[in-house]
Image (cartoon, helix red, strand yellow):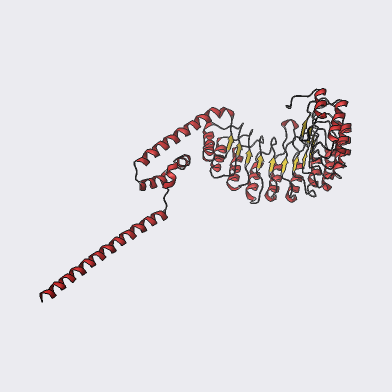
Length: 475
């Protein structure tokens, strides 16, 4: 069943009545769950022979009583997706109560369900006793500072939750400060998504202090939208940069949509200075970053070898910054993706970046879409040049001796040799082979000289012997 399809009641009844033991994923998204279907679902999932691990019930338009029964009795379910259901706080309370005794569920998605601080309180309370839940998704709800504070309290004692998604709620600086302080004690959380909330530099400063001491968080999303009118600015970027100078575990940092501007300089500098940095994904899209800041980011690429993905789209980087980035990429072999879309870059600097792709087959660079045709022409041009080089090289090889091939191999362009000439491989020469050849030649010449000397001495000896014998006969 595709994501947009829904099953009729008769079809769901038939499916659940004959649920095979081998079925591990059950998708009932967009299906209206009537009382009859809910009963069938409970019967199927409490059956000890059922092996369903993932249950998707997004947009099912029903109440949650049957879910409480399932979570209280089922022993196989690992992932439960309940997004877009308008469950609200009453439904969340039922689910949270069941989670206090559930021993198998590891991932719960409650996105877009009208949950506020009251529902957040119920969930945070169950986290203090639940020992299996590893991922909790609560994006697109109405949780604000009080709800964030409840989760912060739970994180201080919880020892299993690894991912907490609170994006697009109503959390402000006060709520972020509470969560930041919990990171000083929590030892299991690896992913924290606070994107599209309503906090700025104040909350980020406290997060940065916690990042200096925290040794488990690997991914942090602090993105925002221009519609929120609250941003991370230079001050927040400076605070984060000091944390990144000492932090050795954070792998992903996403700050898109903010206003860090020339704070990117300090951020790049501190990342460069941290030799033990684990940061591999850095997203600075839509942050008013200019070419001057891009120069600092280029220096970062020269020195830092951990960053593999760098997003700089929707900024103000021009040709100067693009060319400097291109120059750094010629020496960097770790970066695999660079996003420069929606920047004021012209075709001239784009060609410099395309040269980097030509040199590094593992690197992908996204530029403005209007350059797509020019990129195709550039690739065709490079292909023609390469073909001509191969033809010229092949023609020269046919007219040269083996020694000439050796010098030609040394002088040939690297990109030409990479693409072809399987017959050139066995003709590689080195100093050792020359030395061996010379030594063999010397040995042969010495042997010939010795043999000639021996033959001459033998001839002289024979002639002397004959002369003596003749003299004796005459006497």
